[in-house]
Amino acid sequence: MPFSQLGLSNPIVNAIADLDYRQPTDIQKRAIPVILSGKDVIAAAQTGTGKTASFVLPLLEKLHAAESDTERNLRGKRIRVLIVTPTRELAVQVEANIAQYSKYLNISSMAMYGGTEIEPQKQRLIWGIDILVATPGRLLDMAHQRAVYFDQLEAFVLDEADRMLDMGFIDDINKIIERLPEQRQNLLFSATISDDVRALAKRTLHHATEISIAKNSDSKPKISQWLVTVDKGNKSALLSYLIKEQQWQQALIFIETKHGAAKLVSQLEKRGIKAESIHSGRTQAIREQILNDFKAGKIDFLVATAIAARGIDIGELARVVNYDLPDKVDDYTHRIGRTGRAGKNGEAVSFVAKDNFRNLCAIESNLGHVIERREFEEFPVKKVVPVSILNYVPKNKRT
Image (cartoon, rainbow, N blue to C red; front, side, top):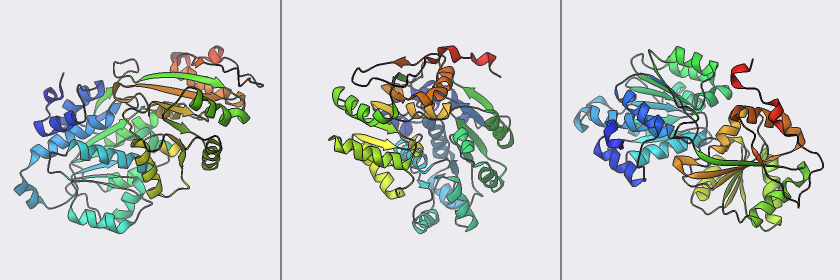
């Protein structure tokens, strides 16, 4: 089924064709027609399956079809679509997608987030924005200063709702919703639908259509997952070895702390491997520049803390590395979802020390299988990590 059969007009179809979007993914095929019909939607699909396009494309179509330029000028320059995201990085990425998809349309968009000067953002709002992508804190700050108005809002989107709740934004979300007009279309998109997400949807959405894409659908990312058991003190040496011996060209490397990120970059450079890092200790401007350089291929190895787990969309990122295994199962899913996007093949490598065993059990239980283990004789393990299949509990028997 081509995109044109989903109800999208030529300017949008041509824009996504320029991006080499050939066939819609499962979530796009199911969500786009429902959103075009004006219904509220709660949707769940794995990271990397095209969720952003599944709500941005139909919203662009609705804005494009709604009014002529004359009618639009008569309405004024208020926000018509509000998209709220949990992180700055995701806000920037979603707005970049909007700009790409709308390049043949007369529709304006803006990403608004903290950590940057507020006055330029206020000026953009004065000029007029059709679609605003914002993080909760900066959005509420602007609302309190009466720099942003929602009286002409037509659609409200909560993107990555599960992550939003994990980060403690529920009070901010409720405050935002209180300021919105009652007559609006509501869309909630998430990688997972927990009880908390469902409770939020019940308060926010009205007679919503629920869309859930199973993990075994055709849109599932093609990610080869394997792990190496390693003693903590040998991690940086092992990473350097794999980069050189396996001739890795690019990798996004996840680590738990900003101090660990800076240390690892230094260790890699001492072994002749140039790398960069992004974490909460670096300014937003620097983080954005490093991300842009990484996407452009100017940086081969990027060491990132959890701030980059969502919001990085690199079409052909070869691999991600869990230098530190995450504590939460969902974080593992979101991390490895940075590779294998849009039907491309990807590789996810994890370093697992003995004290990560409990985390590994949880991750493998969620996956439903044991992750392939690989050994390298140059790195013998003193503290052996058990195989966790005996700890696997089927989902339907969990309490």
